[in-house]
Image 1 (cartoon, helix red, strand yellow):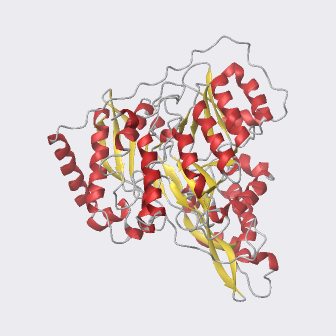
Image 2: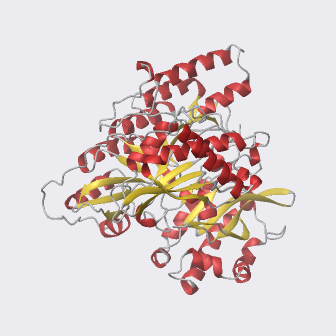
Length: 581
């Protein structure tokens, strides 16, 4: 690397950044070529997507996706995110995704370069955040602090992300490749089984290593990942990742983007042929000299400071907040605190406040989660009440983190070209409906609710206990927004389960449908989790919802033709999305 290509190191925690000035300079050069007519619109679109700049449903504005490997954010980075949200977004907020990225919507095209440069100043890159590339590496946010974990995978996620970023194949794939790493306590909290490439931490005869997975995914073809190798030594993790990427680069479908993900390629040639190709590539990499693993240095963990005995907050909601949000760490005297962000949104002032709180109460880092929340770790347990008071002051002390009330949703028609429905509008209504029934929340701790505005599943509704997918139907010749209801999805320690479609409910009736399903679960399936929905006959569930699913010309009302959170009549306005551009 030349000096200009060296990643920035202004993170304040000893971590190296991932940005490069060369990326930004090339972005400006390509933009100039496009504006002069020297670069076609298709070539410009492909290039900007590979640099995390995505077209929105609305003309003239862009979405910027900040790539955050492992979801790890330092105070300077939080300040940079706040600056971008404040200066260049219409809504003055950021949005955390289910892949631990942050997205900024409604950025004027003329402001994109300024936003990218501000992010890069603190090591944040958008390189390969979109497009046919190796996407963001997601990681269990509790890695390093979870009781019983085989080992801390944090340095490995950083090494993998750094190794593949700007690699020879990483931006020339047939389609996107989503990777993940985790393995806390033998679970799949990192959702490796629904990723194209996954690693789960394992111990074998006292040696650390990984189980290797490939070919998982959601959308119209749902697959639980194939176990490629039961165990590899941890030192071979880069070689295994390279092998999967190389095979995908070679066998992936470059003619039909709708069938180009790795799962399609494996289905086409068969699991055995894919494994043969993988092991042949592994052997070739060894023959080429292998890929030595050098783990990046990690910040020293905080030392427990002496303090007063645990203070009890005088604020009324402290017990409920602590019950949902606080988890003891394996490091005695410390706790991790999940900060619930409704629909993944966070304001400018909240980003700035969290930058301060991460330094004052934790390890000078935050970690984003795949539930669209953030995690503050290494909080001395005696400071929990004080932290709670600080979170109350900035509007981030909402209880219900990781419970039924903590609804996950994609942006939907608020910005996405592919979306059918306003999924955020439904998410708000469902959240209100659930929070109005604390009895159901308490009785169904094993369930979750996830929403996507289209079949692609960015809101992960296919792996929800109760999932909603946006769609439409026609009544009186007019379009009515509706949701397909899926039941029984989830992630196990050894695979993924995908929900069964049980009903199609007009959007405004979805809250009623949810409450009925929850009441059925509490009455007959309490404590069984998603497995209840897998085993129960579909017929009684359909009967339970039949009056809600039917919508005739007679009983349709004006509101049925207006999407949730909208004021105008609903109409299908899908455009060519850039997910497969």
